[in-house]
Length: 150
Image (cartoon, rainbow, N blue to C red; front, side, top):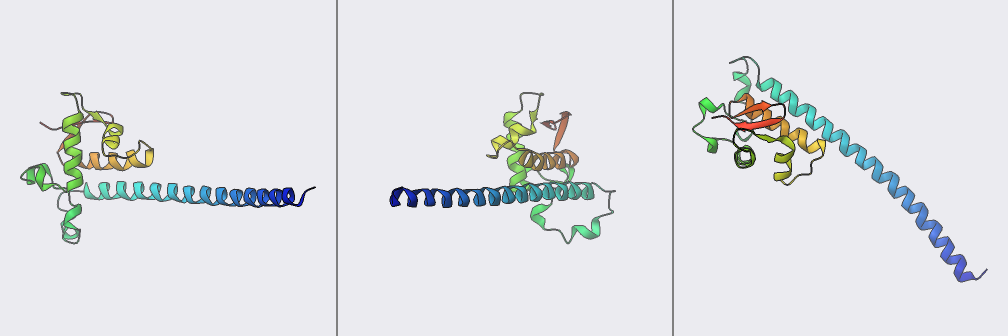
């Protein structure tokens, strides 16, 4: 066999081995991303549940929270401008995208935010929308269908 062909075959074998190692590493990184996304969703849900505790039970802890993360109850706020910017954007999307009285589904809101409609993104958005429901800003007119509270 020609020495040049031997070198090409060796190089191809080396690159094929490297591609296999990289594919395995990529799979491990993607699995870690999925675990982190799941953990983020669980923590976000726990925070929503903790925020929805009995009235006044969490007042002591309220002072330690970052003001940027607090979503005020609608009755206590002067308007949408009192919400953090990301929640103002959610309110804007629900207002614009929800046909009169029919509401908008979470997946549509996720896409309008510029995210992909993967569960790791839609679940994070769903938690925020449900937080707005719990605070009186939105209503969930049907499962996974959100409208602005009149």
